[in-house]
Image (cartoon, rainbow, N blue to C red; front, side, top):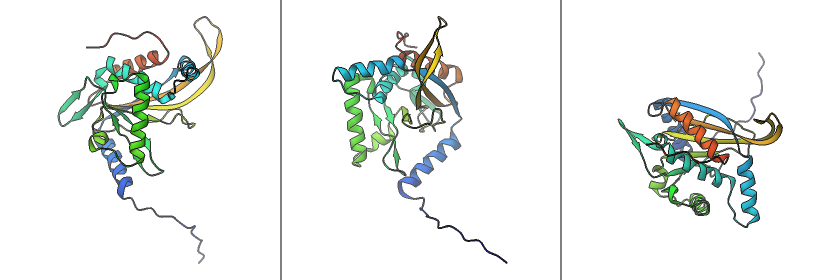
Length: 235
C-alpha cells in the first residue's frame, strides 16, 4: 500500500472579527431575498471632471465622486435608502452611507457616514477620509458600525468588473463598483469613440424592493454619473 505526502496546511481558526463577518454574511444570505442588477456606466465625463478638480488643486478620489452621485440618486429613489427591521420597512430621508473597507486580508468593516446628503463634495471627501482613519485606528463607534442605510463597496482597482455584493443587513441594498475599461463605443451619431465604462453591481433585498424600482435607481445613478441633468425626486 502506498501513501502520498500531504502538503503543509496553514490552519486559521474562524474566530474574532473573521467569525463575526462570516456570521453576518451567512445571516444575510439566509434571511434576505437577494437579487442583483448589473450594468455599465459611462464615466468618461466623471474622470474628466476629476482631472479638472485635480488641476484646480481640489483633491477628491473617484470613490468620493461616485459616492456623491450615489447619494443624489438615493435622494431621488428613497425606496432603496432604508432598513428592514422586524416586519417594518424603514425609509430614511437622511442618507447614512456605509463604506465597505478592508482593514486587513481577514478584517472587513462598513462604517456609516451619517447625514451624507448634507455634505458638499469636498466635505464628503474629508469626512470619508476621517472615517477611514478612525476605522484603521480601531476607534469606530457602535452607531457607525450598525447605523447605515445603504452600503458602497469598491473593487474598482481590481480586474473584477461585475460581482454580487452581499446586502449589509438590515439595510436594503448595496452597490458594488467594478473595474473601469476604455472601450470603443458606437455613439448615437454612428461614430466610434473611446469611452471609459465602469461595471456596477446593485444587490437589493427583494422582500422590500422590487426589480423595477431598483432598475430605475440604477438608471438614475448612471445618468447622474454621466453628467446628465437630475430628475425630480420621487415621492
